[in-house]
Length: 128
Image (tube, rainbow, N blue to C red; front, side, top):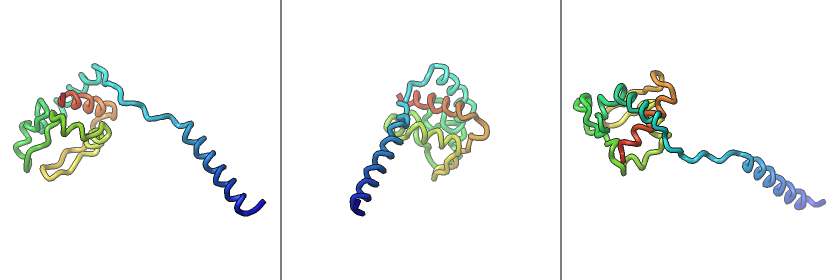
C-alpha cells in the first residue's frame, strides 16, 4: 500500500467517524411556547425585580429610571426584542449588564435559573 493510499483511507475513515459522532447528537430543541404558568410566575417576578427600572409595561419608565444616564431600551418594542435571543436575555438577567445608560444588577444569585426563564417568557409577552 502506498503512502498516498494510506492517507486517503485515513481521511475517509476520519470523515466517517466524524459523521457518526455528529449524527448521534440530538438536534437543538425548537423554541417552545411558554406555558401560562411560566408567564404568570414571570410576571410576579418581573414586578418584584424589574419594574423599578423597566416599568410596568417594559417601556423603561419605572420610578428608578429617572436616575439613569439615559433611556432604557423598551422591552415592549418588537423590533428591539426580535434582535435578542432568549439566551441573551437570560444571561443579562443572570449576570447583569453594564451599559452607557446604567448598570443592570445581576439576579443570578437571587433567582433560580427557572425563575429567570419565567421572567424571559413574561418579557417576551410585552413586545406583542
